[in-house]
Length: 370
Image (cartoon, rainbow, N blue to C red; front, top):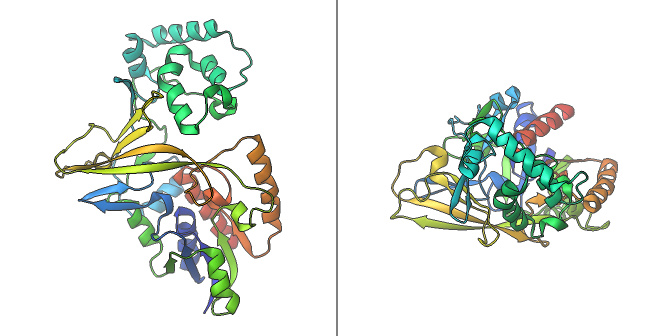
């Protein structure tokens, strides 16, 4: 068998590329290391509820082309992401807005809230932040930092905020209006029926092999000339492709604990509850039925635990510090010289992507090929 493209990875990037290329008459074989399509946007129906198996994914974009593209494959509801922060039993609306400030200080007007924040910022007296803690204090003051940033961030990164670089939070948006919409994008929602259905429709008519590792595939089949192809689209880790010969890029990982609560119809009254104190071991609880306004009996909740990463673990968040960015740049230069291979996606680009940006990048890559 001969294919125009071997596509490594059946996530959003690989599926989008394959969909566009195949519609123009190009042949594709998609291989995926996991035993399912969809990558980290994979959703699974459990007891009538579409569960986001790799954490909450809320689609949002201001790119009309991307929005129109994904709407070919699913109808989206009008879900608006409005998480709640739980600090030792105190509840605050997110993102930081007038509802948050009302709950924290009892203020009612933007002028009152701005005055408190400016007074706290001035009291810290930080002009040149050298770490994340100083950066946060210089932006929002002590109260918001201590209750809503410090514990959550330290759990997320596994380090004290004083030991984290300031660039992680170059800015912290403050909204001086009563608006709990986490995103500012024009288009927002959740695909009715889950994300897996989108990927299935993208890959209709395209051969997909699951549980197939790229290097093993090459050794077993392509190298034996059973399968040939002209080009590779590679969406796996870029350092893994080059056998880590320049060193290993670092990530943070996550662990998920799903709980099926058949006797509970509504566990927390919201899709996402962040736990911002340091003592609670998980960063958030997701109640999946709220994403699609599901009224079925019972519920499914997921506790999300940040975790150190090691090879073999699922890589979630690139650690884009100075050392890792410099190492990635070396790999990027190698990748540019690699004939017959296109690198893309979150792992191939060592970059944290929102879903719409992944799709936009894949559309651009497919257009460049066509």
